[in-house]
Length: 316
Image (cartoon, rainbow, N blue to C red):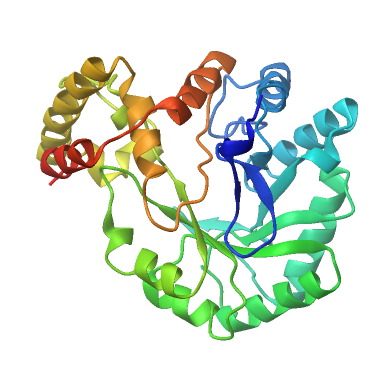
């Protein structure tokens, strides 16, 4: 269970939680994870709660609302709503055309998204509500204003945004309304350090990384001759040709470091994130309860300045 020194305040939101939450991207999401049934999904949510995780992060696109429904069912069954921070993300009226996603982030659609998420999650407020993607004709400042209105009404407690470029981040936050951003960040993907993280530090915005293990690369289980058929890796530059081979060499060095520490590469990669500026907590995913329990061990790892310098050398 969570310990006092492993609880943090999330930016300036007033929300406090255990340093590690559960990224529920697999829950109810049979479109991307065909083997993930409702029983396993609910077992993952139950394990997260039983292990003291206080943030559960989901999205409408995770199973077109099914992830939210399953989370709502478990939270109600266990009667733990007041102990949790529930976060979800809006993708109003999603349309996939030629592999491209288009959403409708106008104020009316966002309000309807919040109302529908409230029903699926079986709650009367959402702790953090994110704009999931910026791919909309609606100016980002209008979307931010709509979420600010919902925050004033008490339907949401904090405003989030995800998948924004640096310019889009600035556009969304023109009036200082953004509380939290989710952006890709890991030892293998560090572009956020160039502009997004410095901006967030300056503007008191908390950063929550997604793909903290670089789509599994940092877990150290891939081999040189692996062939990928899933779209998420086929379209990911980390897994392409020479870049993939170079990344495997980096990860091999990283695995040797983890062995010396007596930890797994995934645990070390998660522990590293918690040393980064603007990162208050992390929300790694899991497809099995034992993975989640293993992830929590990252909180016990102490990384020295020399360790951090070694990572900078490995992942240069």
